[in-house]
Length: 288
Image (tube, rainbow, N blue to C red; front, top):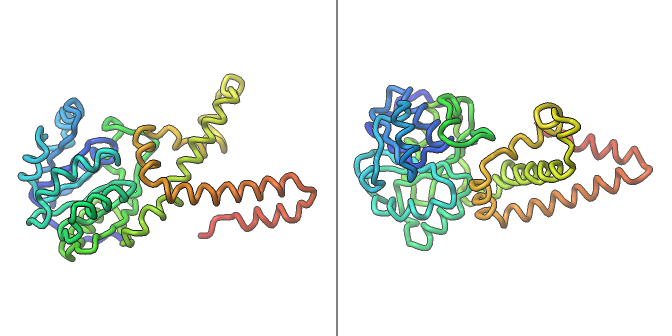
């Protein structure tokens, strides 16, 4: 269950105000443990929308200035933007401030830390809230998006215990359960439980679109088995293209495994032996 201990932080800067970042601002603002919630985004209209709708207390036009004025910085940008952000953040490594992120892949972060000799950074703890919807952008943000969600916590080698505890406490304070996993396993696990399922959904939806069935059966994308499987294909294409590219090695390996399974199932469907097919389907039930 979420940790109920109070972690008080004066100023929190959320970098990137899309679905995750804006939802996080809204959740943090509802918590009396936090003083001011500051927001930064490369899109000025998005920042103004956040301010006008009281998602943040203040917006920061300059990222460096925003970090200087904050105690905690949470990076919520798309994967392809992370290195630009880290080039500013690096000036504050091993200071009294502390940092975390929400990225769906950690490969580019680890590359940056390794290539720039930041492996001894003590005040950066990676995290990944397993929350979201197929909708994207600040206008689809929700103040309860993280309630009962699981956030994966992945400390770096030198992350200090105080930073780790604070990052866990932040997520738990807005309703998340936290699980600590080794950062080296993060992207491999996510390929299996999130990234390849999204890829399959995109492929299935594209293939279905090519059949042009919606003119005859207009309900298929809103009800039934197909809609259950293709719902997440409505997700942000640019964000998911970045995720797929950054985690390509793990994804390709798992897609190859999946294609082997499909071929085995295809062969059983094509055979006259129904007992083997029934046995396969029984073994396919999710393990709980």
